[in-house]
Structures are given as structure tokens and as C-alpha cells.
Image (cartoon, rainbow, N blue to C red; front, top):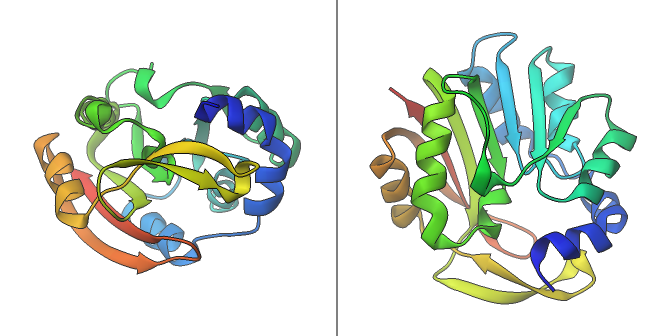
Length: 196
């Protein structure tokens, strides 16, 4: 089952699992790096959890996700702006956002598309715009049994810190901070980067 079909099938279950699981340190760090009332894009916003957090801080935030049912769940839970859109096909004008937040969404993309996606993200950010990305730490692309998606096998891209930094730098980003963090079921590579 492909990833979008899995999210569509298990959208409510996934939303119930993840809605209260907030990355407070990373969110607050991101907020500290962008101007007040910035325009923020949440890439792969899931059930809208982080969109809600940004709204509470008075940001103009827009959430996108490729799964129609996940966007339905987001609209049920959060009074925000949401749109069905695939990260591989971002249709925003250049210099549209002050900050872009990608919590785990890049893990679901093929590594072959990462360079192009990062270039698009770079282009739609304003000058000095901030990009936060969190991906699963490891090597290659692998099918994993996804606990929160009915244990369906899903293809996931894993990255080491240096590899992710290289992808970002090649797209034009300056790395502000990067680190590996222990998670519940995976280690995570977290990077704060900036468009200069």
C-alpha cells in the first residue's frame, strides 16, 4: 500500500496517535528564529497539530499534506488554512514564506527527489527565511512496518546528519544548527537552516 493510501485509510487513528505529541523545544526554537507574525508553511502538516501551535503564537500559517483524509482530520481539529498538496509538486510563488516547517514529512519522499524539493523550498522562502527539517536517522530507503498506519509497510528515506546537511547546502541553505535526537522508535536528525 502506498504512503498516501495508508494515510487516507488510517487518518483518524494517525491523528489520535500524534495530535498531542508536540516537539516543544524545536517549535520554540523555530519561533525564535523568525520575525513576529511571520508567514509559515507546514510541509506535511498531518492532523494540524503544529499549525495549531503556530496559530497560538499569532503566525499566518498554512498547512499542506498529500493525504485528503489527513487534511479532513486537520480541519476537524484546527481552525486553520489547509490544502491538499504533494511536497514533490509545491505550487507557491517565490519568496512566499518567512519560515518552512517539515516535521517528519521529508522521510516519506524518495531520496532521488530530495535535491529538487529542497531547491523549491529554498525558492519559496523569503531572504533570511528559516527551514526546519526533521528526518529519521539511518541509511538508504527501506520498507518499514509503520506502527501508526495499521502496521502497513511504508517506504521511508533515512538520512545521516552529514548527508542531510550536504543536500541542504547544495540547495543553497546555510546550516544554523543540526543534531541527532533519540525518539520513541527512531533516532531523528533535526536541522535548522537559513536562506541567505
